[in-house]
Length: 465
Image (cartoon, rainbow, N blue to C red):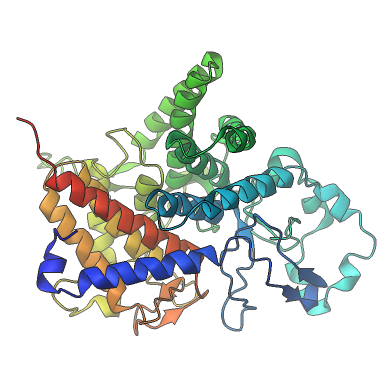
């Protein structure tokens, strides 16, 4: 389908998009149930053999040499991947094997709920198997001993063999359960599941909704696993999961729980209204969108240099629903994207003097120092998807389509002919850095391409008077 200036200016754009989509589909699937891979962590006395249903963040083994070790099942990343798997299935790029992947993922996820860190902490000689220079990275017994019940799914990540992560890490993190619930609810809403699979998925959805009800008000670590506090992204996906969960529960006849979810979802949205940072001139208050949604509120409301964060934009596409506020059609959310675009346009050398038709390569927040410090594929693709979602929701659709294609053109410029996508492409050279073949990067491309098709169809559909 050709509908944008990218296609009109460069006839190779659409063929590239199709090729990359096919490659990203294959590359992402390599992270699901990677049972042929074995990960050795000799310094920690570990050999990890993934189980069916696990989703690794990257199937390319790294050991901070320099690529990081991403051979873990992240609750957040796996939910994003399973949602992208649904898109591949709906668009008939993958057959019924997608349903088997979903079944395996569900069983793996439910089994994790039975993990108990007290048993791990009680193992005699646990620390003796770890190389002395690595003991600083090993979790303390008391930290492991508290991991049981709800605390398991707040672990951020587990090993893909279904065991607890024994390394020090940022915990707890509360975005995984609501993201997983949203992903599964979309599978259900699409009518893709037979009665048997629906019966397996239902307990996991209920668990994730109940977890979100119990814990959304509590502080946790942000999407980047760096700061503890109350985070826009985590709250937004929690609110969306509760809203979608309420509709689902209503359909099951569980009206009491549905009403509770609905009330709590509304409470989340009211709280998020306070995350707006108003930067209007006191002498001129005509423009109501001069500001941005801050990404976090830390303890004692301390300021954070990460207040302006792409996580806010990602929340708008990961929690996409019917709400007018806190989504791509929200003028304040659009203003937040403007501020982020300006930030990275100025900060990243690869954005200076870029070719016509290319958008800014996007990162996470100002001053990022992780690996190359950005740019990130999922950030730039997230900005593109945001634009396509905004186009589908009305307004100046052509402008949003063009802008989304401009971000995609930048992704294309820094994607090798192989179609491989790492986590980052260097802000100075554009070379790929950090974890190779990041499942989230490929999932973001799949989701972005789907949003582009939806936007194109919506813009071409005849409109009533």
